[in-house]
Image (cartoon, rainbow, N blue to C red):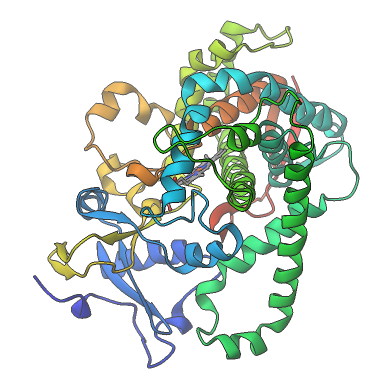
Length: 461
Ligand code: HEM
């Protein structure tokens, strides 16, 4: 095998800065997809002194997901996230005791069967969005991503912590949501800042000051919720926070401490909100621009709730919406909101004909693998029926990973899917979606992918 120092890398690499001048901090993973065409299924990038091996060929990607040889890598933006979220689920090292403790305590709360407990709250929150959109449906277009973000933040806040932001009745943006979105933008840029702390502190001082004040504020909001819960030990709460405060790890008998609980709350509010809202936004864009698909999805909805009725979905109904679920699966193929994930070899090994060292930072580029010719003739076409069982069986396994892989894959998968299908069902049943004339999809990246400036006209059906 060749040494990784001979891996292909972007053109015009220079000393000290590495590939910084050709990097694209505003759209790093889309830039990787562009580079794949030139550099092939495995290549190296370097920003300052940090190397990252990008893996985008289906065969190499599948190998990289082998849990015996590779695991999650904590580096770059995830390392930066530890400053905010410590050893909470997403940012913990797999070997940290708080990871397995929280995983064991929380897994039952995220099983498919647990979604039954959350269904009514999800429904109520979606109805909040519908009422909000009803008022605006006649009045130009709606700002899709802003509004889907309000929906998903409210859902996870209520179900997670019994907290109401009431986003559809307040007139100003919620200060918590605004602070979090700034923090995420800051983290997303972290790999591109000067890796010398004293220089970084000078060059980026404004940004760092804002980050510190946002962090203090966000912690305060969450600590207040935990405090008030602690002061009400007899209260009846049926949410994730209560579970975390009162359940011991079945394996070790240990509880999570308050700081860890706060970090988990912060993690859930973030992981549970931008991802699901992005999925909804892209799905609405794709449905608006593919009216044939929207019609077919509506036919399926009408078989449960005829056009002239007001749908009252029950938990079990959501699983009957097979076509709509394929729409969501196909949306997450074309626009995997988490466009990739970090991996590292557990021991020195080889991948794609190159030796890779234990601990080496690698990036599994889902965004490219989901668009590889292995998907068929026209991999860029939006075709939900790709996810018919017979067509799924005819493809290699392991090339569809919108929720990551292995033991560190997404704990919120069922949660996200239930919420997304439910929300799309009510929206499609109620409105015809009209794209804004001339709109060209532009995708921004702040950890996750999001459509920029997406507006849709809604016509009441
Ligand atoms: C982890 C995607 C929704 C909570 C992940 C990972 C991916 C992902 C790719 C693995 C990250 C890595 O390997 O570094 C998504 C997508 C979602 C979604 C595409 C929506 C469509 C949610 C929701 C929640 C959630 C709704 C919570 C309510 C988490 C947590 C982890 C995680 C806690 C870390 C798990 C661990 O390491 O133990 N997600 N996610 N996610 N997700 Fe999600």
